[in-house]
Length: 202
Image (cartoon, rainbow, N blue to C red; front, side):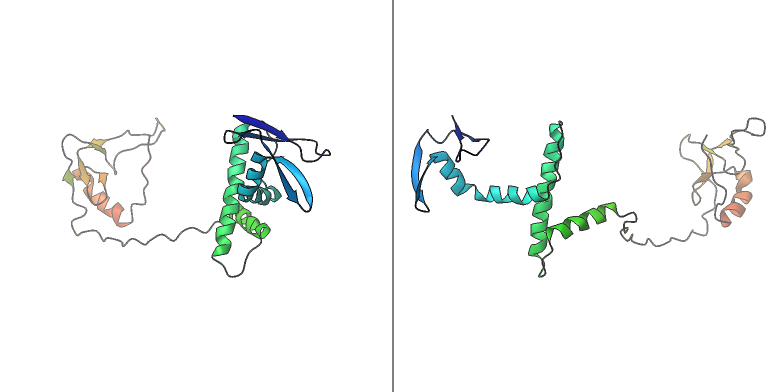
């Protein structure tokens, strides 16, 4: 493993650090613009093969969401967010004839996320099934199951006026509520009005 510290200019305050396992400590001389320049071999190969990574980093840095923080997981999340926004913007413009600038694209995402009234997805309408003619018949529950009688059972929390819960082994399959056989006539009257009486849980 080789660690290279390279400074191209004397005015450069911080050197470039490269950690590699595929190179040795060789220095190459190349003529660039009629000038002979010396650089480590690993630096030349990095410049020739890693250009796209630098372009991507350059595009991200102009609109970076990253902020100074000591929590490393925040930096990872912010960097992934920047990369995903950049990639989605590139794919978005590939499917359009008229290109959208990156500033407008980011603003459109922010406005969509911050909109106070998002448009709900349309829900499929379910057909209403009419009740059968014998829907209000009183039937015996299976086994030893019991229900509160919808008519005579009182679930109010006031102990002075409450008459208590009254259990029954009979119920109405159409209304899906418990009911004594003696209360069936009142149940038909109530259910015909749409079961306006609401059941409360104790």
